Length: 379
Image (cartoon, rainbow, N blue to C red; front, side, top):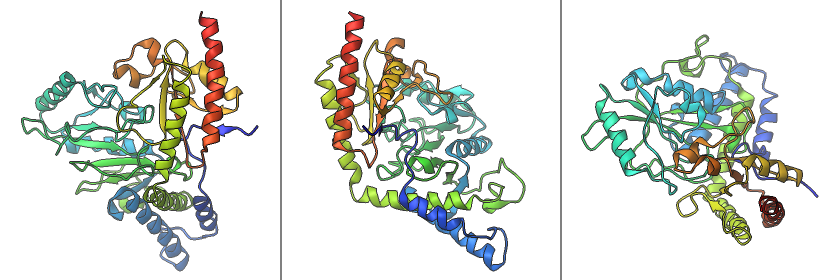
């Protein structure tokens, strides 16, 4: 029986539109930095892709800076901290590409419903108030492990504490873009980051969205490409694929296709809940990404579940999997108040537009069979 891919938050299959755009771009000879006809044709492709990405994320085309990945985009944003008080902090639930740079992990902890613990909010505000100048804080729009959409409006608001002390935000929209309309609630961040391969584009191309009035100081210097904001010969093939994927993703969101995926997610969770009353669906009572289910079964290691489901023909991930492929207790779930055993017992199932009801029901049946064996061994 054919394998079923249910790990779309890790990476998505390449869209047909992106593939076609990339193949066409491969025939372009010119360097976008050249002024002759061939160079101008390549430059036009770059700017078309820039406009397509801008439309997806709700910004002006000139605010889009192409990078090699969301990770590079995060590094470029963090490098601007001198303009934001010289201090950078991340919430404990942030992706590693943002948390790795943090000099101070903001003491804000999330509840299971995606809101912040009241005492942590106070702690965050106290920390901001104590800063000599407005700091820069990483705050994701949606968590990649749980799918929980951040409720930032009550805390971030206009980017100020109750005492009027302001701060700036790097918003990770990598998982949100292309699944739900991109909106910035009550405030506009200073920067946003995203990646093509999360929306059906190619790997190795991302973008920093710069909402500030100043161009960022580059961390890659040389030829002055990307309007002197990121040097290096443009990856026009990747940009073409990114732009085409962004355009197609925007169309799918407008057509409500992800609402259908959310219905499949509900079918999946109901099927699993019918055989396991101890399983927790993290964040299922609040606003989540339509495709993401963080399934936590205490005492049944996520790593074990991933391997067993892989052998059964299903690709999923452990909620705590890191870039090296190793699994440990999820820092996200720990920050949300789960204990070590619980935080190591989660798997993430992330559906895609090509996922069918048969796919999720087959997965639920296979999961149930392995769960029954796990219970027998644990008895």
